Amino acid sequence: MPENRTPDPTQHSLWRPLRLLQESMDADIARLYAERRIEGLKPSWVMELLRLHARGPMTITELAESVGRTHSALSQKVAAMRAAGWVRTAAGDDGRSKKVTLTDQARDVVERLTAEWRATEAALAEIEAEIPYPLTRVVADIEQALARRSFHDRIAKRLAQDPAWE
Image (cartoon, rainbow, N blue to C red):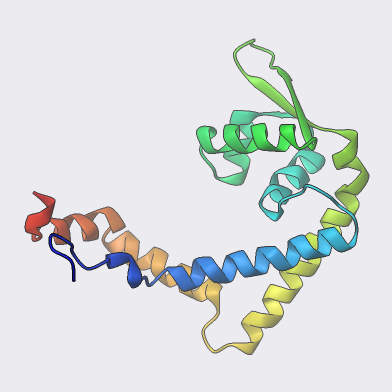
């Protein structure tokens, strides 16, 4: 090992397989969009598009709250969706907020996206039925463990014992 180098801690990751799995599944959904010539749509945008279709125009804050995201994260996502032609924004009622609406492009495919959402959820339920420990159970179990002691506190405890953190 070269001088002054420490081992690369990123070589080992408990979460990398989950991230790679989700990326692979999203790529499969994107492939379905491409097969139907739905161009320029990211699977990660569909929940917001369907929410806007179901509930009508919303401010970025309202949309963020409805999908459980931060205003900042949703603002960035809306900007990307706007640039891709899926939504448009206009000044909100108070002049400080932005109202998000679907474009004609989004309205033209929203029924297909609704069908894809239902099919995806059914496929996930099918997968969960095939495995001995479903992801929904994993998530619930992790949430319970974090309710007992937060992720922050668990990491902070280990960092307090690591001289490199000082």
